Structure formats: structure tokens, C-alpha cells
Length: 626
Image 1 (cartoon, rainbow, N blue to C red):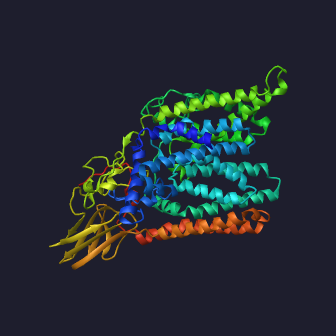
Image 2 (cartoon, rainbow, N blue to C red):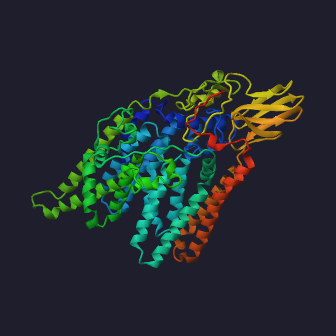
Image 3 (cartoon, rainbow, N blue to C red):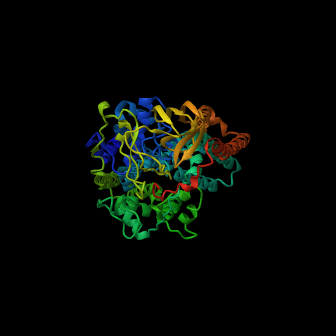
């Protein structure tokens, strides 16, 4: 533990060069989300389901990359969002090192071989470039070794199925828009390999099926508070990102061995993306040992590691051919919304570094004391293996520090109370023919009580074209002699008192999204804004963001936690006779799938006006005003 902590601290020392410094690039978007959630909870006492501070308002509870549901977000109340986000990253990195070490030990590797696999994987350029320069949703990839370890133990002890479901839930809560589907594929591979190795033992097959069904059921329930809104909103705002790529074997070797730290804006050869998407440095030693381990795998009983490296290596190579693994995978739901196949290199490295540890152990055995003359010290092979591990550790730490240098330097300064706007207002909106997709909204907006009409999210959210900027009332009365008498708002509610002698419309300066409700009048949409049509008279109108499926997701998560606690208590006895339990588990899984299919339809009928057209919100369309 101490060695792993020192290693993580060395890799991520940049985070503490400027303690108040925020992350570069996309980290501003994640930090903005953390800050918006903190302000909503702390200043207004509301759940952070809606973020009014960008895009004219977005449904934050449905954003797959939102992280404020994670338990570690609570640190924000104690140390602020800047330090809490850094602790979030460092703790995941520490779990990544320890998890790979424990997995290697579970596979029978010696301590030196396991340590080599751990430092070369968790210290790889993949984490340096992705987690160090902006992709905060990739932090959950550090949990990959524990996911594999829990699955392998769940095959014989169902308590680890509950632990695995908890891990996958943690990935969903950590904004793992990529990590979650990648881990589903990783578990599918591991499960198929387990079935192939036990296909002649009917009892073992039943236990494996029961373990897999239990993980699916528990995860589907425990993570419902995140998965339910994501499934619902993918119907409103489909994630259409497109794009593909392909690298050759020579380029893959460059990705694994290129040690010089280049600019994150530098493109890799003729490829469409910058180096951040390709950097996966582990060095020549780890790469060479990984290749040696792959060659030895069939003779050392490590075929699963070899097949894992092969499968995820092919996915990393990409290509859009009809028979390429990436081409086949990207045709499936969910995976069709993911891009850049080289992101699979994190799972390639998971198996490649384990193979490198296997090769290092094999070399120690081949050079063991029995093969040396009496004059040569028996500990020399172990000392050489330790030296190789230390050399690789120094190499990956040096590369890691170089990749993140200067990426966490700009301080986040929260506005003081006297500099906070008295009333919330939208400070800026896209001009005609100006793209609405801009740089991330700065974290300080939420504390300043300011909003922006520009967007920067992973979903196809688009601002209303009728938003108005400036420190003016955020509600307008439209009608003959219509008069707005007063108004007030919180992140999730807007209240107005209006007098409309002949009836008319009340406009709210917020982008409409399914889930908004009005306590009077007919809720509708006006140029993308929330609007309420009212009959004649003087009325108090309150519109509230209260998504229909929020209680369902919450109750499903509660049920999943209770069920998981029961499995942790009695799980070690459930695999003894899995027949009836498997049937019950499969039935519950079928009901769970049915709930995920029917719930979005129920929500659509309850909270979507006829004027709402989800398909018109294409992310490529510019925000223009007629």
C-alpha cells in the first residue's frame, strides 16, 4: 500500500504544484458540473437534477458523464470541488495500481512480476494522456483489474457478484460513459472464457450462469439511478458522434513505446485525432516482455491472457471493414455512439502487462539458482527482475509527469458573495450563424449565479434559439396588456406572478427538456424555450423540473442495495444449489429489462408536449435566430 501510494503521488505530482489549479480542456466541463451540483445542493437545497448554468439549462441527472452522484462528491462540501476532484482521481489511480497487483497475484504471479504488471499498467501513457489532460470520465478505467478479479472470484462465491455489481455501479456513478460499456464487453469475454474452460461440467456451467445473471440483476438495480435517465434521454437526444479510425501494427508499437512528450494538439501521422487518443506508453521493456509472454502463453497455461490481448488489440487497431472486430462492435446499440477505437488500448494494456509479468516470472525461473554455478549468488535473478521493475517504474513515472506538466495550473477562484449576481440570468447566448458548441463553461459560473447559452456536453443538447441575454427578468409575459409583476427562481424552479387581462403566454428563459412541469396553464415550447399558455386573469405560475422517472430510479437503486446486502450476507451458500435460484434470477432479469423498455415510453407520454421534436436537435446544427 505504501509503495503504491508513493508511486501514484509521483505520477500525479502535477496536481499539487498548484493546489488550487484546475484541469485542462475537458476537465473544465467536469469541474463545471461538480461546481453546479455543489451550488444547487449547498445554496438552494435542491437535488442537482438540472443544470441551468450552461446551454440555457440541461438535464444533468441524465448526462452519462455526470459524476456528482458518486459518493466521493461529498468531499466537495469539506474541501471544495477543486481538491475533491483531485482526490477522486488519485484514489482511483491508487485502486488501479493495487487492483492490477492483486489480479496478478490471483493469477499466480510472484510479487515482482505482479508489481511490474501493476506499475506498467496504472502508470501507462493511456492514463497520463486521457486522465491527465481532460478526459475525466476515463478515470473509472482504473477499476478494470478489480472488475476482472471480482468476476473470477464470483465464479465460486456469489458474494463477489455483489461486489462486482457495486464496482459497475461505481463506474456508472463516476460518469463512465466509455468505461461502463467497455467493462460489459470485458466481462462478456471473461464469462465466455470461463464457460469454455468448464463446458464439460454441468454444475460449473450453472454456477457461472447464476453468477452472471446475479451481476446483471444487481447492477441493473443498483445503478438504476443513473441508467434509467440515460436510457430515457438517449431517446430524446441520441448520441450521434460518428467517426472511425484504423492503426497498423507498426503504429501500435509506436503508441506503446513513444516516450517523447509531444503537445496534446499534435496529430498522429495522418490520423484524424490528436496524440491524446493514441498515447499508451509502457516502454520497450514492458512491450517486449508482453510479446514474450504472449509467445509463452500457450505453454504456460495463460491462453486467456493471450486471447484477451488479441481481442482488445484487434479492437484497438480499429478499421471499418465489415468483418473487423471494431466494425462489428460499432454496429451494436450503445457502441454505435462511441468513437475512436484506440481507446480500447486500455484493455489491451490490461492483458499485455499481465503477460509481461508472466514473462518476467518465467525468466526468473529459467535463471534460478539451480541453473547457476555455485559461485553465483542465488538471489541474482530476483535482483535483476527487481531492477527491471524499478527501471520501468522510473520510465513510466517520468513519461507520466511529462505528459501532465502544465495541465493543472489555472486557479479556480470562486466569486465572493459581493460579486455574485443577485438574480440568476443568462449572461451570453450564441449570435446568429454562430456555433453553439463552444469551449467548456468555466466552473465559476455556478457560484456567480450566471448562465450561458453555449453548450459543451457529451450529449446532443442544444440551446433554445429564443434565449435572451443580460441582467434582465428571466420571465416574459406575452399578451395584450400583459404584465409581469414579480418573479423568482432556483436551479429547478421558476415562479412568476403575471397579469394577463385577455390571456396569453408566459415565456421562461430556459431551454426546454422533458421533465419540466407547470402547476397551472398548458406547458408548451416556444422557439425551444419553456412556455406556459394561460387564460385571462392574474395568476402565480411555477414551473418545476421534476422528471417522471426520478422516483423509479431511486427506488430501484434502493432495492438493489438491499438485495446486494442480502447476497453479501448469504451469497457463499447460494451456489451450492443454483438451479431454482438461477430460474428466479433470470425471471427477475426479464422483469428488469421490461422495466427499462417500458419506463421511457411512460415518461414520454407524461412529460413531452406535442411541439417537442427530439430529432430536430441535431448537434451539428448551428444555433441561429430568425
